[in-house]
Image (cartoon, one colour):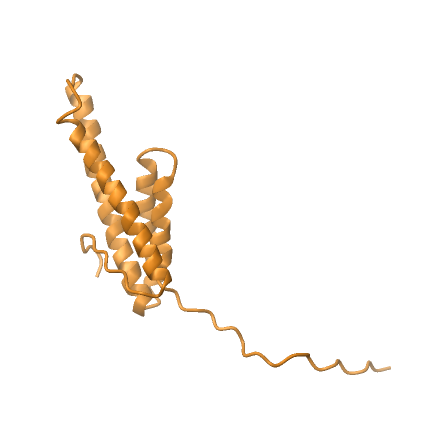
Length: 145
């Protein structure tokens, strides 16, 4: 016994789905880990995540490489600023033991706070531009080329 043949597929034949090439938006999006609820830890996680995830995007070349490269540079710049400013703040705090008043000592942590706000703004701009398939023009210290 043989089975009757299967009926032909209905509808018009569609070409196979083509995946869109990466744009380098992933590293910029991971920069939003800065909102992790433990102070300073979120900043470190965001910087590291931006650098590590950029390596997966760089291999695609073109726009993905350019945007991921800039995300890695900014992520490493932010990570370096976090370590220097927060490290200096707590280093001075533990060495001096007695600090009178908030200023000028508080300027260190306020500077870090300003850099964090700048990081949030840059990350959102980078994520939006990369998602729209536009080059991101945000620069950090050029660690990666």
